[in-house]
View 1 (cartoon, rainbow over the protein chains, first blue to last red):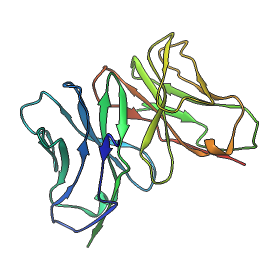
View 2 (cartoon, rainbow over the protein chains, first blue to last red):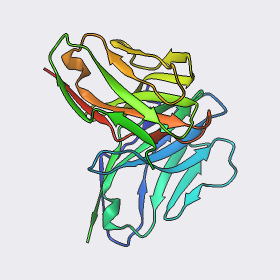
View 3 (cartoon, chains in turn yellow, cyan):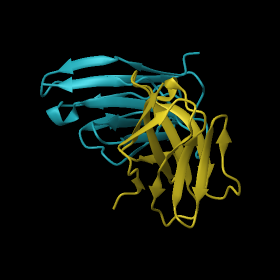
Length: 113
Length: 112
């Protein structure tokens, strides 16, 4: 069974609009962490945001926020005010145990002018 | 700001050849790991280390060896390359057991 599911292979958004990238996860461990990484066409992996399973509030980092719904096991990434430079692959990942990340298959975001 | 440095960035091998992908970090991170990325898939964990002298297997360890003799370095060895090992390899490090991973720029390996 998939531990991290990203159901949107591709998403389109216009510049300055907000976009939500979906991520659902599956774990029976009460302690886990959820990450989002951005991979631009140049190939590097850029950390965006982190949510711990015990965190009471949704994580935010600038224009990025993580909509964490624990009961639904979802950890959607919200990008507000999209910019052209946001065009990239976005990966959701879950930490299993210590420092072992399981990644989803990614969502390709294209921001149009 | 070097961060996590991987070498080489590109490599072409013939089936059966051996090679080592180098990974070095200058952040004094205890935790290091290797992932591979294949088309249409997310990254998958090959091996990881929680400190010098300590390594363990990840999800896809077959065909790869690692060692961790220093905090800074975590090389990945392919003993006898196979076409199935054609991939992009990422090294990552972290300062804590549960925090974010910092990734290197990746190494693209092609096995013919």
